[in-house]
Amino acid sequence: NLFLEYAEKFKVEYVNYANGYDNSIKTLIYCKQNCHGFTEFINDVASNENVLFPNLQTYLIMPIQRLPRYILLLQDLVKNTKKEDDEYDTCVRALNKIKEVANFVNNEKRIAENMNIILELQLLLPPSSKMLVSRERTLLKERTLVAKEKKKLIKYFLFNDMILICTESKVKKIKSALTQSKSLYKEKDRCLLDKVGIEHVDKNIIIDNNSHENKGGYICQIRTEKRKWNFIFENKEDRLGFTSEISNEKKKMLQSGSSKKIEPKKVLKYEISSSQSNNNNHSSSSSSSSNNNNAN
Image (cartoon, rainbow, N blue to C red; front, side, top):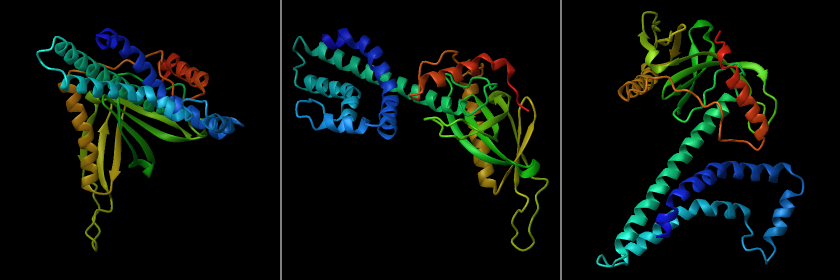
């Protein structure tokens, strides 16, 4: 009965803890590496016989492990309770309810982890770029492509609802615990998948007389609402793999009827760095200037 009574509360509390767990571990590692005296303090605590849980990392993961243990407990209870017993149905309902909670928490954690990944990308874009982060959006693939024009390297990102095309900027990002001075990306184009066109272009193939190989590369043309992009691939297989990824996701999007634009959240509930205020300020500035997106 207690499991049934507290199941809905478990959903809230365990989701909050699970979403913050990764950030807690990152903060712990950062403190061990950068905070003078922290590691010595942790070691002193661990050597104290009066401390019940001397290992902080082990202590932090205990709530994460608790729901699976509840399931094992209730499974054992159901197994050892006779079906004619008055409490049998209650045990079964409690087991199913806790399984439901565990699935819900795991799903919310996956969503939060994916939002964190997209937020990391967002922080590498200029503040003028529109907000990418949304509960419904998933980053599926990242590639470095070669554009036919000037053979320029392009950073390409495939999401479940759109593509993002960038170049690497020479401007260096200020060093932080999250990005470690990575280069900023300069956004060039973004387009919803249902607006993307794909075409294989083979009219400019150059065949080497000796090796009989295509020295001109295999061209794939991507058409967005803004422009056409011609990308060069070394072989047909790579090109086919690239276009299939887009086509498959576009098909899924249209079949699910989710071609409506995914609106990003203005307020992010999930942080990915101990430098919380800096990240939130960056995210806010990205959101507030979303109407000034510049894709040269």
